[in-house]
Each structure stands twice: as C-alpha cells, then as structure tokens.
Image (cartoon, rainbow, N blue to C red):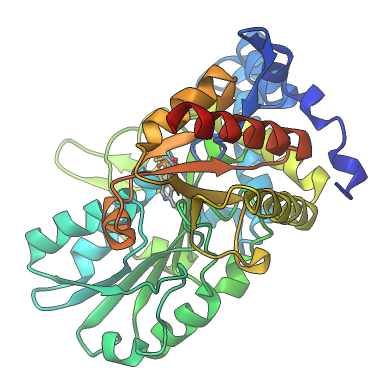
Length: 409
Ligand code: C6P
C-alpha cells in the first residue's frame, strides 16, 4: 500500500492488540461502526478524571473547562466540514436523530398536503422511515430516484421528479451497501433551481472523504460520530444559519431557552436552541479528538487509501468467480464498501464461517431492505474498510472466503 502514513496505524487502536481465538482481529465492519484510537479513548477518560461537570451552567473552573472543551469540539467539526460558522453545528445523538429533527422541526412546519418529498431507492432506513411517518401525518407524497443495475442513480429524468409539488429532497451521499458515491452537488443544485430544500445523509461520506458543506450547498447535512473514530451517542446536524434561526426547536427543556415564565418561554440562540437538556458532553469532546486524528491523516489520503484497498480486494475477487459483487466495480465511484453474495448461501452462514477465522464482516439487509429487494436478494455479506485496514486484512478475508467455499460446497 503506497501511503507511508498508514503504516503501523493499527498500533494507535488498542482493540487490535487483542486476539480472538488466538488470532489477530480482522475488522471489516467499519461502515457499521469504527474502532477508536487511543487519543479518543484518552480524551473520554481525561474528561471524567479531570473536569467532569455540566456545561453552560457552572461558574466554577471545571465547568468552564468542560464548556470550553465542548464548544471547541463544535469549532473543530465546523472547520472539518467547512461550515460557514460553528453556530451551524448542532450536536445530536446520531445521523438518525438529526434526520428526525429535520423531519419534525422543518418539514412538518413547511410542507402541506399534496406536497412531495423526493428520496432514492438506496436509502438507509434512517433516511426513509422518518419521511414515511411525516408523509402519512401530513398527507405528503414520497417519490423516489431509481437506481440502475450497476448501483448508480438514474438521474436523466430529474425534471420529471422535481415538479412544482416537490418541496424536499433527502438523499444519501454514499450508499452503505454499494459504496456508490452520488453526485450530490449536481443533484442539489438542480433541486435548488426548482425551489426544493435539501438534506444530505453523509453518514458514509464524512468519515471517508473530504467534504465541504458550503460547496455542496445542502440545506441540511447529517452524520454520526461513531462511524468516524468517535464515540457512539454523538452525531451532527449541519444546517444553514438562516434556516436554523427560522426553525422551531424539536425538543424543549433546559439550556435551549433564553427566558422562561410560568406560561411562556423564549428560545436560546442557535445552535443551543436545538440542544435541549444536558448533551453528550464527552461524546462531543471525543468526536473533536477523532476529527483531529482524521485531519492529521488527511481526508484525501484516507479516501485514496480506501480506494487502493478496494481495487486490491476487487482483484482478489477475480480468483473467486462464484462470488457476486453488488454495485460499482469502478474504484473512482466507490468508497470502501464491498457487498457480495455466494450462490444462494445465506450471508449469515458466510459471516459465521469468517467469524471462526476472527474476521468481522456484516451480514444482513444493512438497514436498507428496499434496496435489497431491488437487488433481488434478502441480504448480502458486506466488507468495509477504514484507515486501519491494510492488504493483510484483505488477504485474510480471501483466505476466509476460500474456507467458506470449501465448507459450503
Ligand atoms: N449504517 C451500517 O452498518 P446511525 O445509526 O444514526 O449512526 O446511522 C444511520 C445511518 C444513516 N445513513 C446511512 C447511509 C448509514 O449507513 C447509517 C448507518 C450502519 O450500514 C448501521 S445500520
């Protein structure tokens, strides 16, 4: 693998020092969640050891320190995605909660009966089910950008979908099943030309490539900390400041208010207006550290590294012709995700045999059941790569797959 700053990277991740059944762990499920470097783990223990306290409330030193750490993490994340201001960064629990926030706070207030929401056929359930619910409640229509056999979106008929009734578009940047990178900048610009408000589900892009929210120009943009070396329970909603200022809160309670009387309340400024109650303070701090770690590696290096791993894996698959790969085989069009099947054998059987070799892959519908239906399978086996993977992991995967073949046939 060509990139010297990715050598020996596993040593930064304590989990890779453990053995499972006497073997090194081969972790190929980073699309589900990533492992954590020692810097992130240390930032969490350091917070609890040194300045554990509530934020935005205390007038004493450790609370001021904790508040600074939390707000600095917001600044770090704003810079990382090139937000116009850190006021545009709202901490949520995860990408799913961020989507629900937008559905309940913006879409429910701005769309009316007969309007439509545009989605795609490759969405994760998190970017589908909240829209189904809001559509039922408000009597909205859901329309879908279709996918073609190679896993790309069919984009030549967008004008048919972007009608006068279309008011909101929500789509994934990168498919968690196929690895397809959608041309979101173009799609968003066409949507805006039709007056459509947009949301990008960036859960599978922000961890893997350089993103610039000002350039993408989405109105809402969501991602999860745990998929980018950060802790679980912390996610981000980015939105343009004027939208946030004109949007009602989603949750109500402490910290999101500026003034409360017995019968009335006024809201705090953005972003705190959207962060009711004590937030996941340590989660935000850990995510800030994860972003520092990623920044240090360089997002374009990370993307290149994953594409190299992907190409290497695709080459290795040529020795296993009975295995079918879903989606693009063009490395420029994919992130580090490969979904595959082996004859009619259930992916759970494949994943169990691989687990016996200490190889962790995901098997199932990957929370994208409509996409599985489109692909004509109930489930796939999925290997996904990240910064700590190298060629040796892929070699072990292919040794494991040879074993799968010999056990199952
Ligand atoms: N996909 C996977 O194994 P949360 O759970 O909120 O952190 O992320 C939800 C989500 C939203 N969009 C996309 C494109 C995703 O891939 C995910 C999470 C994981 O593919 C877990 S199901």
